[in-house]
Each structure stands twice: as C-alpha cells, then as structure tokens.
Length: 428
Ligand code: SDX
View 1 (cartoon, rainbow, N blue to C red):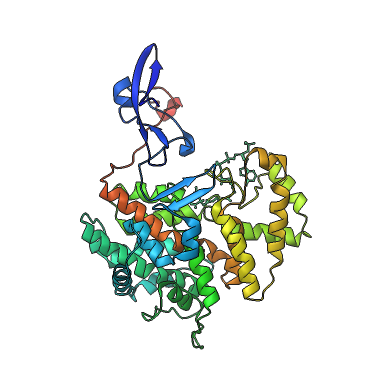
View 2 (view 1 turned 45 degrees about the vertical axis):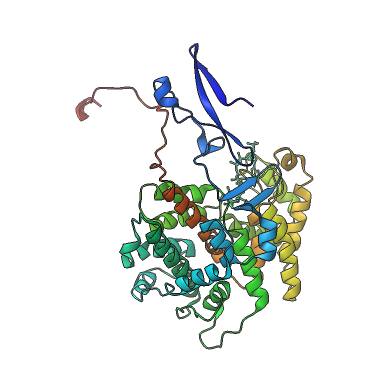
C-alpha cells in the first residue's frame, strides 16, 4: 500500500502522506496542501469525503452496518451495559470498574441541582415553544450560573464541567416536558439510578407517588445507549467546532442541540411519526407516499430513511425495531403506526429507487414508536435523542480539547464579483 498520494497541478507533482486508522481506513493528510501549492485548496460541500479529525471514540462502517463505542459493539452494549456506564466508556475510554462508576454517579448527583433562578428563564417561554429550543436555551443559560466551568483547560476542570452537565441536563429535559404539560418542575431523587431518575422527573404526576415501571426504565436505557454517539455527524461536528474556539462545554452542547433539531438530523424522529400519522389519516396508502418520496418534483422525503454514512441497515434501527415490538407486547399495547412503518419499510426495501440509492431505515425510523409507548409526547422525541447523545457530545468535545485541536476555520472558493469602484447613489 503506498504511503503517499501524489497530486499533479499544472504539470507539477505534490506528494501527501496517507494515514491509516486502526480499522485500516485511509486518509490523505492535506495539512500542507495550501501552503505547498501556493493556495490550492479542496472543496467538499457537506464534507461527504472529508475527515475533520482523528478520533478514538466511535467506529462505524456504513457499508457493513457496524457501530462500536471504544471498540465495543453496539449490540453488546445495548444488551449488556447500562446508559451511565456507556457514558463513562465514551467519555473516558474504558468500561468503568464498580468503584469508578460509583464515584462518577456520586459526582454527578452532587451536581444535579439546577439554580431556582433558571426557572425564570423557563417562565419566559410560551407553552407552545418547541422543547428543543427551550433545552438549547437553558443549556446555554447554565453558563451564567456556573461561570467557573466555561473555559476549562485542565482535565480536572473539564471533569467538573462534565459531571455538572451530566447532573443538570436531565433536570432541564424534564423541565422542558413539564413546562408543556403545565406540571410543577421537579428535581431528581439521589436514591434512584441515572435513567430511573430521568423517568421519575419526567413522568411523576404532581399529586401521585412515583411508581417505577422497570419496562419503561429498561426501554429508555437501551434507547439512550443506542443514541449515545455516532462519530462526526452534523451535531457532533457542531459541538467540536464551537468547542474549538474555547467557548466552553455548555455553549458547545447548546449549539449541538440546535444542530440536532433539524428534520434531516435528529428532528427526523418527530418527523417520522408525523409522517406515519399522516399516512394513517390518509387511509394507510403507503404506495402513495413511496411515490411522493421518489418524485423529484415533490419535496416529500421518506423520513427515517437514508443516511449519509450507512449504505446498509443502520444497526441501531435493527435493534430498535425488535425492541419496539417487545415493549408494545410487554406493555400490552398496540400502535397502528408500527404496522404502517413495517409496511412502508417492506415496500421501500424492495423498490428500485431505494435499493439503487442504498436507502435503509435509520435510527429515527422506529424510535418514535417506543417513545410513544413510553408516554413521551412527539415534540419531546428529539429532546430524548439529545439526552442520549449528551455523553457522545461530551466525549468528542473532551477529545478535541485534550488533543489541543486548532480552531475550526474552513476555507472557501470565492465566486462573487471581482473588484469594482464604489458608485455614489446618484450614479446607481
Ligand atoms: C440522523 O450522520 C449521522 O450519523 C446522523 C445520525 C446520528 O446518529 O447522528 O445517524 C442521526 O440524522 C439519521 C438521519 C435522519 N434523517 C432522516 O431520516 C431524514 C430523511 N433522510 C434524508 O434526508 C437523507 O437520507 C439524509 C439527510 C439522511 C442523508 O442525505 P445525503 O447523505 O445528503 O444523501 P442525499 O440527500 O445526497 O441523497 C442521495 C439520493 C438523492 O437522490 P438523487 O439526487 O441521487 O436522485 O437519495 C435520495 C436523494 O433525493 N434520498 C431520499 C431520501 N434520502 C435520500 N429520497 C427519498 N427519501 C429519503 N429519505
């Protein structure tokens, strides 16, 4: 295998080193390109062919449908781990010992209070506000109440900011939901496990005792693991580039939440259920919607289908599909949109348009079925995605800062006007 790539421009040859990852991925290192060629750069809208960093956190193979966190398969972690230990693994690189996990849990619980003054910010939102906008704002507001955790340089200060965010974020998630429901805002209960605490803060009715439903806790725990990281996706890249200016962890995560909100990204889980409901209301005519998705003149896309990287089944979608059927059975529930989803997938996976473009169900296609079964409102689905992705965002931000990555600043090819003389308004 050659160790260099040669570029020829106007008859002149330039060699660039080829780097190889631990899974034999190859990348042409073009750090010296612009300087070495007198200004030539590459251009790659959407970064479909461009690596932004070297990372040791998550490995995915889109062709083979492989996803691993720190070398452990998503199938093993979803089956055998819990969300807090998966968060520890992503952030610190190893599965924790009992003592390490207990300390992590204790440090997080010590930081799980949110300043009462933050409620005044929440009060300012109308009930109709989308919870992703509320969550992004409240996450950014944490900076004002915890200024010491902004520009952190030492590993110790980073750890303090990390456990602070891991402790406060679930409270903000529950506040975003309870605001919409008109319920009093709640805090966690330190006697509960991390995910059980999230379900308690989200689902406890003001006038009722909280009663744990283990099926709900286990289902949510698995969903959060499946969403925990996904290498350099849109929102993670946002977290890294905002973090690269040393804006701090809270500001970086707040920006990541906004990026995740988009319907082409994490917002797709809400868009899938809205699409399935529309198909149901339209008499379940899946063929009509498959044709709309294929029609170039129609802006409609089959939400929950397709992926920038996976050109095979998204391994998370496989696990979630099975989990959705199990949870509905465990909760003795029926959901007609699950049958519509399965019917839609069955037709699409045999249709030339989808087969040729390698469009398969992604993580968002079935996840909403489970969230609905757990009693989570549709507008909160992407908030749940953000809750799951929090440790991955944190891990990626920490890796970028510890590796002292430079501030992100892409170049461009200018296609505007050449120089022209200013004209006074009389002459325009
Ligand atoms: C997530 O990156 C990640 O890792 C993200 C994520 C994570 O964990 O962080 O996995 C989470 O964001 C999952 C994706 C959720 N989004 C959706 O489900 C929205 C629907 N999907 C599409 O919008 C689309 O598939 C994207 C945005 C996901 C990927 O788009 P790409 O890679 O830019 O591909 P493309 O738009 O260039 O599509 C290639 C072709 C095009 O047709 P042609 O121009 O070649 O004729 O496939 C078509 C597209 O029109 N196509 C679709 C389609 N997705 C792609 N046609 C109909 N329905 C779709 N869903």
